[in-house]
Length: 303
Image 1: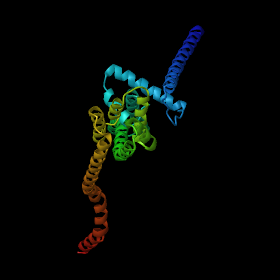
Image 2 (image 1 turned 45 degrees about the horizontal axis):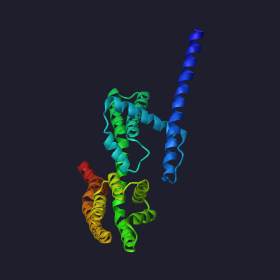
Image 3 (image 1 turned 90 degrees about the horizontal axis):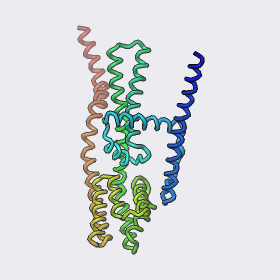
């Protein structure tokens, strides 16, 4: 019995050592890849070291997502990757996001089961609540990513006219288009500036300007970005004056922004109607008709 216990402890120690070695090797390879990228000129400002608990949770989510994805093939990796790129979450992979969906679904359902079982609730309520919360946990991570992607793409569309104005000023001053992009990326802030700086890094690593802009369009697939990239690519291909193209494009994008603002203004009354009917009107009816109803009840009661 003692011999079996010692053998079990030894095997447990070997398994822990092998797992730790694998984790350290993966971190070393990642650090070597990052250092190699930095040698080629890519720098990421404001990099913060994650704590060990968060990195361990990310590793667990990646493992769960990779294992279940390979076994069942139930998630759309390309769609998840596109949502993550549009949201600017370049450090999160599609498998990690799928793993977080699985963990959140299991975690929410398990918490509900633990809370309701300890409170001696009805069995039907326990099962129904567990299913509903598991579904919410499954949907929540992808919904958050999509919401962030929509907000980020909206900010990029809003900043495109300013980018085009900077490009027009730089090009008409005699600056080349690639240099004008670099100057504009240094002045712009927010998601549009980040994507421009990433496109400039791709150009420094040997990619053509048109290819870098096509990659930026793949990261930000909006109508205004598509018009901008297509105009630049066609202008360079046909040899047309880039300054005139940028001026016409700026006018078109401002018209499109005005149309979007008018569309939102027209949708506002319909959106206000729901809180008005379900929240404001009931309170007004209670305040206005409540005393009258009490008087009617008292009058009928006295008769």
